[in-house]
Image (cartoon, rainbow, N blue to C red; front, side, top):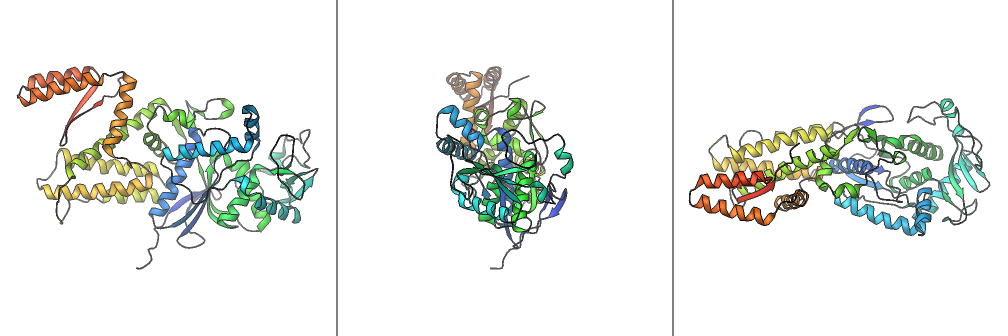
Amino acid sequence: MAKVTPAPIRLFNTMSMQKELLEPAVPGCVGVYVCGPTVYSYIHIGNARTFTSFDVVVRYLRYRGYSVRYVRNFTDVDDKIIKAAHETGEAPVALASRFVEYFREDAKALHMVEPDVAPKVSEHLPEIVRIIQTLVDKGFAYESQGDVYFSVRADKDYAKLSKRNLDDLSVGERVQPGDQKREPLDFALWKAAKPGEPSWESPWGLGRPGWHIECSAMSEKYLGETFDIHGGALDLIFPHHENEIAQSESAHGKDLAKYWMHCGFLDLEGAKMSKSLGNVVRLRDALEKVDAEALRFFFLSTHYRHPLSFSDKALADAEARMEYFYETLRKVDERLAGKDFGTGPVHGEPHRFLGEFECAMDDDFNSAGGLGALSGLFGLMNELTDKPPVKDKPLVGRTLLALRDDVRKVSGVLGLFEDDAGAWLLRRRERAVRERGIDVAEVERLLGERAAARAAKDFAAADRVRTTLKEKGVEIMDTVGGTTWKVAPAQG
C-alpha cells in the first residue's frame, strides 16, 4: 500500500507571530510536548481548556495522517506541592501522587486521549542533573552555596519568545534576601535542600530541581534536543517557556522547538481566572453542574488562541447545543436501524461538510470553524429525517448513512458524540429532573393518558395532556422509535 502523505496544516507560531506551514523535522512524524499540571491540587477549568485544546491538536494531526508522539508531563516536585503537603500533613510525594490520579480521572471525564508519555519530575532526576551540569560546564550556569542558577546575561538571545527587552526586565528587580544569585533575573536550576523538603543527591549537594529545568530535561529525553511543537497556556510564555529555551538552547546549541503554540486565557465574569484573585473554578466543581461533553464543546466553541468567557449562561447554551446534536443522532439512528438502503447515489453533496470541517481545522486548528461546518451537517440530517426534500427513501437513507459516518470521523477529532445518544439524553434528563424538581411518575402517568387518548383518536384530549406537561416544564417528542420526553429549557 502506498504511503499516505499527510495534508498540509498551517499553525500560528508564537516565536514568529505568524501562521506557518507545518513541516516536521521527520516528514510525516510530529513530536508534541505540552506542559502538564503541577499536581498540588485539582485542576481548574482554565487548565482544562488548555489540555483539551492540545488534545484536539493531537487528535487532528493523527486524523490527517501524521504519526504523533505526544508528551505531557506531571510536575510532582515543586514549592506549591511542598506547601500543600505541609498544610495537610502528607509527604509531598504522596500528595503529588494522589493528585496525579485525580488529574487522570478528570482528563478521562473530558475524553482526553492519554499521551504517549506522561513523565514525572521525580522520576527524571539523572536527566535533570545532567543538563544542569552541561550548563555549568559551558559557563551558562553557576553554583552558589548549594544552589545552581542560570545566568541570564550569558544568553544573548534571552527573551526572544516573549519579545521582551532584558534591560526593561531588570528595572526595579532586586536580589532578594536569602537569594544566592548574582543577578536579579537569574533563575534557579537546582535548589539546596531545606529541612522537611524532599531532596536528591547531586554534584552540588542534596537538593531538588527548579521548575523550568524539568521540561528541558524531559522533552529532550522523549523527543530529542529539537522537536516540532511545544505547547502550553499563554501565561507560560514568560518566564517558563522563555527559560526552557534559554536552558535547552544554551546546553545544545540548537533550537528547542520549531513551533510554539499557546492557548488563550479563560475569563470568569470578565476577569482572567487567577488563583491570586481567588476566582478559580475547579474542573470537578464545574462537572457537577454541567455535562462533561458540553463543557468540552464549550472549550472548543472558541479558537484556542482567543480568550474564552466562562459563565453559567455559556454552559447552559453549550449543554443545549449538545442536546440538539444528540437528539438529532437519536432520530437518525432510529431511522437507519436494521435497514438496508443498497448502493447507489446520495442526495446532494453530503461530504461537503466534512471538507469544510477539515478546511477549518487545517487553518491553525480552528475548532470553532469546524463546529460551524458541523452545524450544517446536523441541519441537513434533521431536514432529511423531518422533511425530506426527495421521496426516494433509499436515496435519503444512503445520504443519512454518509452523514452519520462523517459525524463519527469528526467525533474522533473533537472527542464529542462518543456516547450512545439515548444514554446521553437520559443522563441529561435525569439531571434536569433533579434540578427542576419534576415528578417523573406523574409525567409517565400523563404520557400514558396521552397514549390512550391518541389510540382512541381523541386528539383534543391528547393535546390537553401535552399542554399540561408543558406547564410542568416537560416537552414531548414523537419519534420513529416512539414517544419520549425531556425537560424544557428554563425560561428567563
